[in-house]
Structure formats: C-alpha cells, structure tokens
Image (cartoon, rainbow, N blue to C red; front, side, top):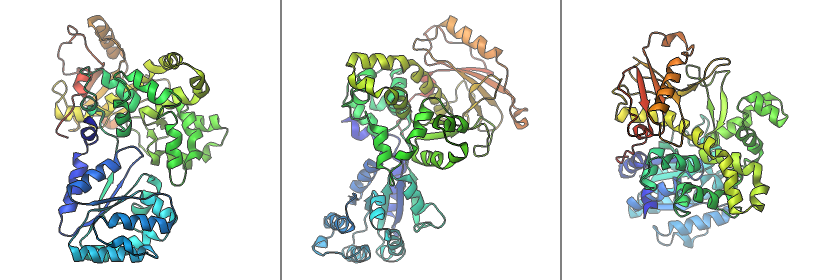
Length: 481
C-alpha cells in the first residue's frame, strides 16, 4: 500500500540520524517535535520497529493512570514491570534503567506526547534530566521524547534554562514533506495535478493519507474531506488549535484576519480592533505552531525588516480560511454541487498562489540537482516588494555569489503556447529592476520566467541571461530521498 511508503518519502535523513543514535555504544537522548499531522508518530514507529524499540504515547489522564499505562507498555519489553504500583516518576524510571541494564535492552524507548505528561506532572522535566544524566546513561539507553506542542517542547529542550537543554544528541524539528514527492504518493501520470494537490494538501502527510482514500480527482477529495460538514477535515484548524498545550484557540482571530488578506501588523490589528503593540505575542505563537510565516523582502533582514508581512504558511490552512471559515453556514446548508461552486470562486486564485510558493520553495533544490539552463545552483528564494515599485515574485542569489536571478511567476491552467510565452517574456524584459542593497549592484542579472507548462512547440531559444522555468524543471521527484 502506498501510505507506508508515502510517509517516509523525504524522511530518510531524519531516520538515518535516529538510526546512528540507536546503534551507538553510549545511547543518548533524541528530541523530535513539529506541528501536528506532520508525521512524527509514523517516523518514530518505523524507528522503533527497526531496532526492537518500544513506542509509548501519553494521554491527558491523571498522573497515576499515566504511570500505569506507561508501565504496562514497558512490560512488553521488561517482564513483570507493570506488577508494581509506582508512587512517582522517579521510582518508575529508576527501576526501568536497572532492569534494562540487567537484561541488556538498550531501547530505543520512545515517549510520545511528552507535554501531556508534563502538564499533569510539572516535576517530570527535572526528573528526566537527572535520569538521563545518570541512570539512563549508565544503562546506555537510547531514549526519545516527542510532542506536537511546539511551545512546550522548545521550552523543555531549546531554552538556555530548559531542564533538558544540552542533553539531546539529536534534535529533529520535523518539517512538512517536500511537494516534489507528491507524484510518488499520487501517481496520476499528470504532472500538473501536483500543483492542485499542493494547493489542497500542502506537505502534511496525514492530509495526503486521507486524500488517497477520498477520490481520484482533487476537487472530489476537497469536497469530501473539507467542504462537506461531515468531512474529516471540515473543522481541522479548530482542532489543531484546541489540541495545543495549552490551547491556542485565542490566536484564531489572527488566522481569520491573515486568511482574509490582512498581512501587515497594522492591518491585522485593525481588523481585530486591537492596538498593533498587542500583536507580537500571538503572532509569535502562530509562528511557533508553524501555521503562519513571516516574510521579508529579498535583501532585508528577516528579523529587523519594517516591511515584513505575515502569511498563512500551509496551503491547506490557507484554503480553509479562504473557503470554509467565512462560509460555514452556506456549506452546511448547501448541496455538494453548491459547495463545489463556492470552491470554484476561489480555486484558480489559490492555485496561482500555490504555484508561486512552489517556485520559490523548489528552485534551490532543483537547481542544485540539475542546473536550470546550465546556470546555478541558486540559493534561497524570496519575493521583493516596495511601495510604488513593481513586485518581483522570485529573487535569488547564486550559491557562488556570481549572479542574481530576478523572476516573474505566471499562472495559467493551460499550456503556454508560443504567443503566450512571447508576450510573457516581453513583459519580463520591460520590468524595471528592483532597487536592492548596493552589495548586489555588481552581480550580472539573469531574468527568469516561471510557467506551469509549455506547449510542445513553445520551447524558447536557450539564453544565459533569460531562463524559462516550467513545472517539469522544478517538480522532478528525487527518489533517493
């Protein structure tokens, strides 16, 4: 079945790092975190299976019940471990280390959804710290802790005063799957379908998994899973916020505002009727959850730019706040045909936005593997904008620092024929270059036109100062990952 394979496309590097830890003589601690639905559990289950490890997952019950459930799970590896009632976590972990050492079992021992345990037992991080430093190290145990509450996981590991700071030998911030692997999960044979799939599901493995069972056509998948009030993802963003520890529902109005088109801090605050000075903390929370991203124009400092804007990071969430959130009552009372008609009002604009995102996201890796137009590879790509000046969709400096790419993204559901391509190239040539910082003045400029698909007879003449980049140039899946 494709699902198991799909979830490990683009997870080979993470699995290799965990494998090295599991076979090391000393053992040690791994920390895995990332937004919900990104595939942490599936990665950890695969790792445990490879090394005869033990996967455990916490729930939100009382500390006594949590310890009982944990002990019953450990009894799968250490016989009779659950026959004792443990009064606290310290005694439980102490016995675990002793028996593991006596039997020669070295893990990996995986504690998933650690924030649920910490919420019920605030002393647990300090207990884990002492245990990792002494008894677990003496037993040469490999231990992994994981969780979806990014605020709590970062607070346990990354902050300088965090209990587990400096203890982890591996820290994995799991990111969405690369969209270049959509054709592997959805082998439709049509490359352009990948843009539609990315527009709907982004790079979140759980959404890919659900979509595989919801119909062959992307619109059918969206109607069944998102638009239908009974669909599995109809209330997904609300669940994501509610499942955070602590709940993040208080930041939902900011997502509403950003999804409706407010991208600057002043615009977001204005939509909510709140002072702009009150936006910093909730915006940071959304950034930490991976639900929004902060964009600065190319050449500006990412943190210090006064022109920075905030956008919804995940295409699925963007679609949801564009189509579902404002029209929930209409979707509830409408027929499937009416729901599809509503989606059609926004679908082409959503596809255009997703295509633009894909161009920036995939250019560096694609050009590294196979130089586009014999020029490259290119570094991270950004947009550039400034009041009263033409916006540029893709700007990137070559890795060797010898060229600058200025790119324009064009969207069309149809292939670009010779006439459409010539017109787009003429518009590209006529655009004035942006006033970038002076350090870029010396670099030769390569202009690039990004189009989804070229008609068979529309291939342009090869030129070093003008590139035409299509979906095929960016979206060739790398099966070695």
